Amino acid sequence: MKKTFDGKTIWITGASSGIGKALALELASYKTHLILSSRKVGELEKVAAECRKPGCKCSIYPIDLADPENVTTTADKVLSEIGNIDILFNNGGISQRSYVVDTAVDVDRKIMEIDYFSGVILTKKVLPGMISNGNGHIIAISSITGIFGFPLRSGYAAAKHALHGFYETLWAELHEKGINVSVVRPGRIRTNVSVEAVTGDGKPYGIMDHGQDSGISAETCAHKILKGVHRRKVMITIVGKEWLMIFFKKYTPFIFYKLVSKVQPT
Figure 1: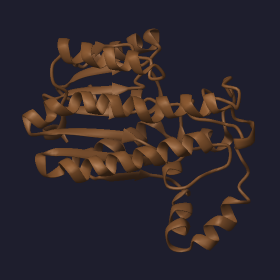
Figure 2 (figure 1 turned 45 degrees about the vertical axis):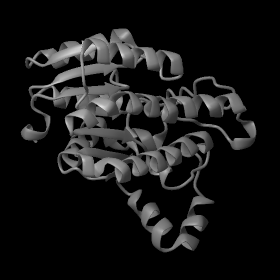
Figure 3 (figure 1 turned 180 degrees about the horizontal axis):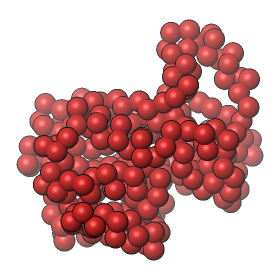
């Protein structure tokens, strides 16, 4: 994978923890210039310090993905101070744990802003430089809930479904111009995504789901993502037993709907 990542300027959002942090740490082993972004500046500093140990150049640009104005100004600052981006990982996001009937519309809007629109803004900002250079790669970290809905995830699933449509269209428009696009669809990954999820009134959920805690490690997930990016795969699916739900949804939907109606919402 050295040829894919060496010498590249790579921007990762949500880089302070979980999959984003794991991506940064693995990419630091290559001769990359990493740009790390999230709201948690202290945690970003720790990740950056780890990334610099093998000699990786690393820059920190705090960002609030819930604030479109901040996303826009941060992108402008990055492009002005760093220059063109070779690879963008739209990884930052937020999950949800609440029933539709209990979820305020403002919470749905917040999830959509963070999980969908922030990536759209950043994508549109970096694209002109990629098109001008005739190459680039944009990666959107989605979820298997971008394939099917799941209890307590209505806003989250809606945002992930939306980004599938956007990035598939982007690939169709630009792949012949040297711009690669990948959508990553992880299943249960062992991160704090459930702990930091929002409830129906916007407050933190604060609980580690059992399924999340027993999922694939963030490091394993990141490695599989980078292998998929190296191979220029459009869809990168990283799952354990969840592959059965994907199979049923595609080939035997009547079984899928029977099963998903019985899923314990955790």
